[in-house]
Length: 295
Image (cartoon, rainbow, N blue to C red; front, side, top):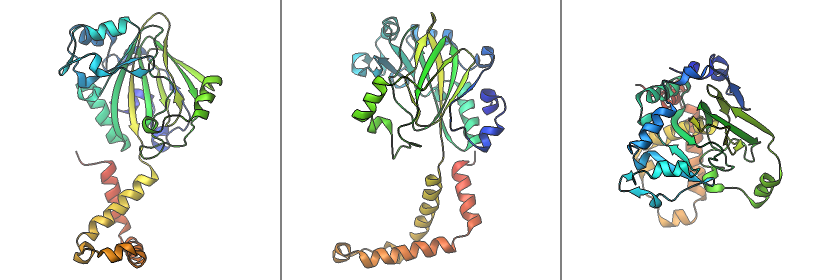
C-alpha cells in the first residue's frame, strides 16, 4: 500500500505537494482493512488499550491522565464512560499497534522520504475533538465512520516547523484568538466515510462530529522535508568531517572566547572553503540517504 491507496493517482503530489486543502473521495470499503469502529469498540470494551496509546480529550483539550490512569493501563471502563459523556478518544501511534497500518506508514515513508506517524480519533455524535489549532506537518485525514466537519482558517504562520511556529509551544496571540472567536471559517469541509482530506501545514482547524453516528478517522502525519532541512544535512556533514582534524578539536582559551572575532572569521572561511570543495555528487547522495534510508 502507498499513496495510491489514499489518493488514487499520487503522481501530482509526488511532483509538488498541494499547498491548499484538497478532498479525495473513495468507496468506504477501501479502508476497512485499516481500522473499523467495531475494532476500536472491542479494544475499548475489553480494556486492552494501554495508557501509552491513548489520550482522552474533553472540551477541546487533553484530560490530565492522572484522572484515569491505573499503572500502565487506564482504569477499567473509564474510556467507555468518557465517550458516553461526549469526550473524544485519541489513539496514538497506530503504526506501532496494527501491522496493516505499520505497512502503510512504512510504504508512505519509502515513497515520499518523509517521516510518518498515524493517530486515530473516535468522537461521539455531536462531539468535539481539539479546538482551533494547527499542525507543523501535512495531515491526511482518512474518514472511516460517521461524518466530521472541518472548519478552516488560513495559516497565521507560513510553513510552520518544530523549531518555529510550533503550536504546542507558541499557541495563539490575543489578536489571533480574537480573530478566531469573531471571524467565520474561510471554508468548511464535511468528510464522509471513504473521504481522504489533504490538509497542508499551518491551516487552523477545529473538527467536530456531525450527524447521528460517532466519527472515526485516521490522521496520517507526513512530516515534510524542507530546504532548511537539506541545508542542515549538508552543514552537519561538513561539521562531522571537521572532527577528523585535530586542530579543529583543539581547545580555545577563555581570552579567545571573550574576543571571538578572529576565530569566527577563520571558521567562516573554513566552512566556505569546505563547502566549495565538497563533492556535489557525494552531498546529494548523502541527503538522499537521509531521506530514504536503506531498509
